Length: 463
Ligand code: NAD
Ligand code: UDX
Image (cartoon, rainbow, N blue to C red; front, top):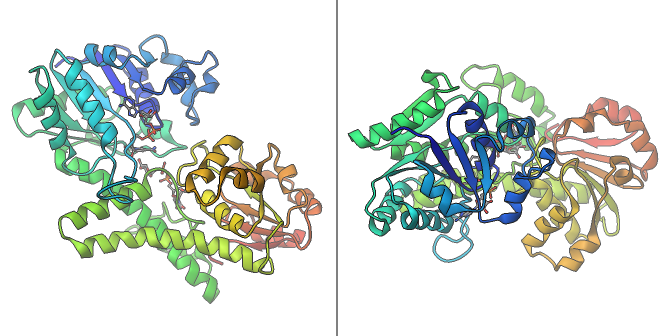
């Protein structure tokens, strides 16, 4: 099938950047990204391209180069479905908050709504591409809905999970380690796979485009995220042991990372991983394993989450105990709220949970994050439902200047590894703080020795 029109349902952190790069690299294809959220679409269309709703280094340039030429953002979902030969589904698949599988399974209601909408609208054959992260065997359910409620047109379902990481989305999309495409093993399935391979082949070397059956592709995405998160929990587990023994986790990570079988990436001890994917996808994997009666498999992966929760809790507990077991009314400055640097995304950020724990002890939290605004901070805390919105608003403020955020604070907690934190005038910050002045570096980004020379009581992770 010759693809001249692509539609992507879901203009979020994946749909937006992914389609911007496809449009950029395939000027012969018209790419329309649609979303129910009119405000989000309006921001993607903002005259000032710096106002697009996803902050990613390099993204605004890519969007500016293609928007209005062959890249469009729209709320007209039916129209975009109708004119496309290939439809990517890139909607959110959060953890279920109700019913069977509550707190574990992926909530597929948005996926099903997309399938029903495609089935209702389509009058020509379509290739439907799962871009969202989905439980293994979702393609079966999609096919059933499309075939049973559609207008008699033919559907091919492909799985094409996205491996980009936020903060590096553009470089990940431009030069991916691999592109994974799963599809049917019959002739029609293979033709559909080829149509998608042809799109990626416009910029991705052929040997990096991997094709598999659809179930392997679906399961590979959950597995990749589980393995990555497991590395972070593994090094974080060792960080606690380091703190008890006099070992230094940075040195341990370096030493083990030089073993080429282990590799050096993803071994940074931290206050705990966040982001919209790791926890959700592991919980989903655990749920799937349980649903097949594989209790040991489920328990194995669940530990990755438990260790991560422990890491966030012990970071908060350590702040309380170090500040003489009372933080009521004390100002604690949070440097960083995003779940990692170079993104404005805060979903599942460790900062939210640590702040919540400190607010239980009536601390006053002053947040500075270069890309996160106060309404987002409040909304993240309100979502936890630990206390009412007014109490949250009374305990947390956001301050647009890092020096002002730290002024007269008892302690600083570094929650995100933003590069700019390393360049601050730390002597000036020290001078303006209450004494003794504490730094809890949840990312190990500052020079411990230099901080101690200034006079700080400095604590990193795992040393
Ligand atoms: P997101 O919440 O940023 O975006 C999803 C968008 O889909 C929202 O704007 C929402 O309004 C829209 N939407 C939901 N239902 C819709 C419908 N029926 N019609 C039209 N629009 C609809 O989510 P995201 O972070 O882009 O993630 C999307 C998927 O990609 C998830 O399955 C996620 O697990 C996966 N994923 C995310 C990342 C990441 O880094 N964020 C990386 C790889 C994979
Ligand atoms: C992740 C996967 O990496 C990506 O392939 C997938 O498509 C989506 O989920 P993302 O969540 O955007 O990407 O960021 P990632 O770089 O994986 O970081 C996740 C969390 O782990 C962050 O909170 C990060 O700070 C933390 N982390 C990562 C560590 O604490 N230590 C590390 O060594 C690496």
